[in-house]
Length: 279
Length: 217
Image (cartoon, rainbow over all chains, first blue to last red; front, side):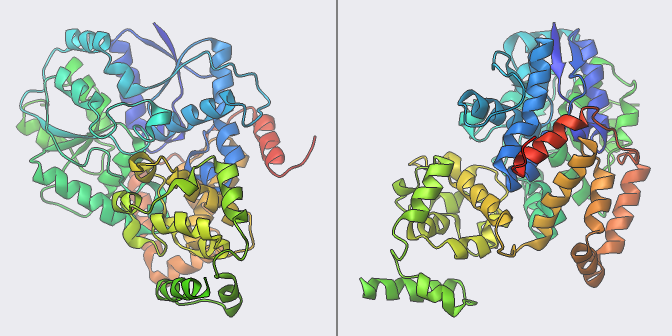
């Protein structure tokens, strides 16, 4: 199986650990990810905020590149996925013209939903060598991956299950909580830190109330926000994992993943030692 | 009719205290007819007239607390045609486009899309943005995208902090040192890449920027 991979800018910088763990996990799953040739930024919130034209045309270039390759796109970043989908829909409605040929014949997958497909879950389960038993986590989806449903195509947008299923497939316990899709503040922290910190702090409080030992997410910005907020805390910190890091931990116990955990601000190693998942 | 307008006028004064006298003359309902409403509806394809003020958008909004004009009021103001008030509000910059309002609206009024459209309008108008820092961040993002085709967090933050207004405020509030310390910590963790990766097809991206400015090739 071959897929066009659109990493997005975060995965080259802040979310380097995410990027490396994705590569490792997909190698374990025997799925070939081909990076879209010479991809460019999707414009994220900024293009969307300042000019609708840019918000549609910037992601379109990547859609065109992937169509040239003739493969479906899989995007690990929630915002990239949302922008790519939105752009594809707008172009199909012929509201904007782009200088590239886009037919809309390829599909844009969000990585979590791609892996939560029943066939994929089965494949994940066969690869598990050390189930993450006893690890209690809450899954945090964020906004852009699930909303608005007319773009993302989620039907269970109020209580999404994709990450929960993946995490359960590797043996961890996904707890139920009400803040799965509540916004973490995204990039507003750069202009208005007070807003972002109050939103993120509430998420962490609710995760603690749900008795979670860790938060699992799939969005680079959500991970950064949740992780960086705990930078000055010493006690009762909650590690924030990318779901691929947990998958890899279950697939290849005790190898390689250590160097990704070193990139986290909140050190997850003590927790994993207690759970005997890491030596 | 005039009595109605007065009620709205007063209610509005409570909401926004700093009003120009020039604006006041325009607040009377219907002074522009429904021109502004029709225009916004046409451009966003949002069904703004369908709003019956149930406040579900405001209740769902995670940041309504920080907004001066609440999401349901935004829709009402558009119906009234109060353009300047909307463009001047902090709402359009505070909105996170988390799409809660749009998702839970019973009448499928696309509230978030409308607010973002107003933000687009404000960015292309002479109205000074209420949340300057947020507006400048978006601007810095698109500027750095123009040079590299991709965004590098380190260079984006450098470009942002080189903007005089941002730098001045960060020094005044004393957050600059704190942010530099955080940046250094992220760098030591290996999260910041100092050398930006470039997209090779910069010609195509610059062409998009020219298209956006309305320049023909």
